[in-house]
Amino acid sequence: MVSPIGAAYIDSLFGLEPPTRGPLGEEEYVTLCSEVISAGTDTSTTTVEWAMLNLVMNQDIQEKLYQEIVDCVGKDGDIKEEDIEKMPYLEAVVKETLRRHPPGHFLLSHAAIKDTELGGYTIPAGVHVEFYTAWITENPDIWSDPGEFRPERFLQGDGVGVDVTGTRAVKMVPFGAGRRICPAWNLGILHINLLIAKMVQAFKWVPVSGAPPDLTETYSFTVVMKNPLKAVIMPR
Image (tube, rainbow, N blue to C red; front, side, top):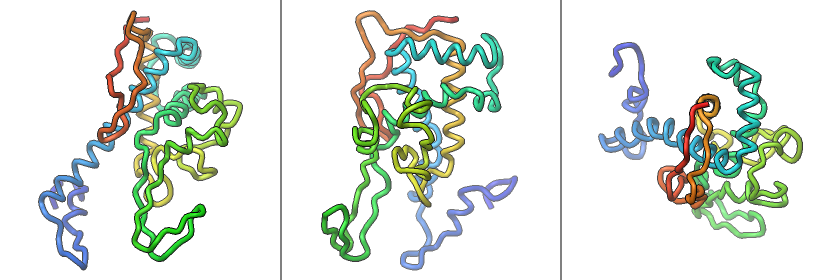
C-alpha cells in the first residue's frame, strides 16, 4: 500500500492485471494518475473561463447574477455550499455555459461488436463510433436560438428540467453519460458554481476597450479559448 492513511487510487492500479497482457507499466501508471489530476482541474477552470467570457460580453446577465448573490448572502457575505442551492440564476448561468461550451466535444468512442444499423448507416463490426456532443447543443431542433447565451432558458423555456447527466433527456451531456460519465461531475459543478459566484461577488468584469473577448475555440486537454480571456476587473 502506497498511502500511509489507507488505500489510494494508485493502489487500485497496482492490483490490475488484465488477463490478456499482465500488469500495467510505469508509463501507464503515470498517465492514469495524471488524467485524474488534470481532469479535476482543467475542465473546471476552462468552464469558469468560458462563463466569465460570456458574463463580460453580457453585462446585463452579469448584473442579474450579482444581484442574486447579494440578495442571498450580501455584498461581503461568505458564499458556502448550501448557499449555491438558493441561487437558481447562478445554476442557469453554469448550465448555459456548459451547453454553449462543453468541456469536450466527443465522448469515449464505442465499437460495434457486430454489424449494426444506426441512424440509417451500416456500422460494420469493430468500427469505432464517435459521439459529437456539441452537435446536440447546437441543434435548433432541440434548442431555440442555440448560438445565443441565454441562461433564462433553464428557468423558463426549452431548458427547464434539463440536467447535465442526460438522465431525463439527452439534450446536453457535458460530462458524458451512463456508466462512463465523469465520476466527479457533481463535485466539478459545485466548484464551478462557487468560483463564479465568488468572482462576480468580489469584482465587476468588463471588456477591455478595443479588445472584445474572442469566442474562437481550440483543442487542448479540453476545448479551450484560442486566445485567453482579457478583461478589466474592478473591485465592487
